[in-house]
Image 1 (cartoon, helix red, strand yellow):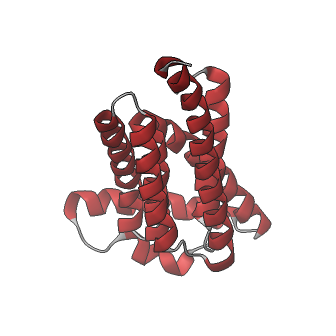
Image 2 (image 1 turned 135 degrees about the vertical axis):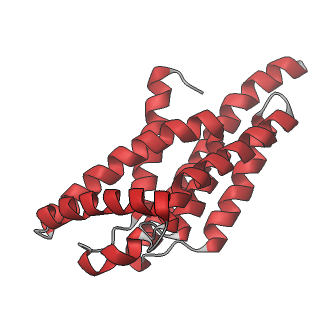
Length: 194
């Protein structure tokens, strides 16, 4: 077997292993977040390292793979960072998204974020209905939007601080990151996206 044939066989196997590791990482994070409302640094940071290693090893060019993985980390964390800044989301959630981004690259991370937003919206509605606090949740959303606009334009009190007293409860968002990312990984198999 020549080197090209061996490489063509190893890439799908490597991608399958990479996807399996990502899914395992997400499932462990979701379980830990559900139990403790925290996602530990050892898990998110090792996930980033593994994701960058897979991205580098599986790319046609190791440099482009590494840069793509680093771009995924940056996009995943930067998109969720404002939610952490206003105390709507925890730092572990932001780092978990960075770890997933290391596996997915920039475009995969952006696509996964859409699936995650849908999963988060469904979870928020389900939790608020279960706790019989849907009206309070929608009121909080409107108030948060106004406060974020004020905070972004003139500064002042962070929106998360003012809304904490009226919260309908914490949502372990690692579960939403897990569900949305896995849904994206499955969906991309059907739509042929890499």
